[in-house]
Amino acid sequence: MPNKRCPVCNHTMQHLFTCKVLQRHDADYSHCSKCELIQTINPHWLDEAYSNAITSHDIGLLDRNIKYSKALTPLLYNTFGTQGKYLDTAGGYGVFTRLMRDTGFEFEHTDKYCENLFAKHFEATRSHYDAITAFEVMEHVTDPIEFMKTDILPHTPKFVIFSTLTYSGPPPSNDWWYYAFDTGQHISFYTKTTLTKIAQALGYSYHSLRGQLHLFAPIEHSTANLHKAFSHGLFNIKEARIRKKMKRIKLKKRDAEFVKTH
Image (cartoon, rainbow, N blue to C red; front, side, top):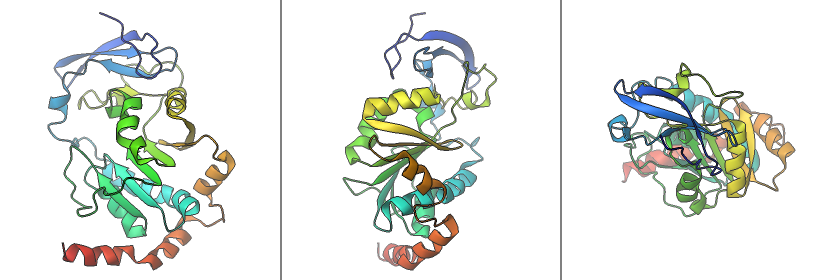
């Protein structure tokens, strides 16, 4: 089988293993020894895998969105205050956008493949956003740098915040649950080294926030202030107090009134 070129660093990738996805398609997985990307070769089954945009296996969807909405509240408030404009790209049913708007953050939603159920009337309208989120997306793309250049960078965000489960050390064996062979939707897997390489290629710096959360920020942005804003707030204002402050904006009430007339 021909060796594949890594879409992140253009290094020659080496065959890692072959497994069946969707219980019937043979899938070859390759590993890049330079940037540590793991990726499938020629994922020809994707149309079948996305017959439903969100797999029924994703039972953590609601919990994940609630957790991320709480985690990002201090970072966004202490960086952009009450005036920030945000986009959740590949946002699925619109759950995260709705949660953040309920808190008081002006989020909009976009997803090319999934019906927007919870953030109708708040689809993407702006050319610029202060921050863009992309949760559980990076493991679905064949070319992460091209995805960023096409779907995110045209909006000139200061922050790109995303989630994906990284591995460390040698490539995980084929019993790693995150390969998700049964769904066929996960095709790219990263380490922090991979994500650093991607950020550098895009002119950003990479920061690991907490757990599966990652952030690309301008290279000149203060790492100390960034982590302080995320963990405690630049003014030591924690998540619960911020939510109380944000509710004074009454965005949820304005949204309810807007939806009634549209």
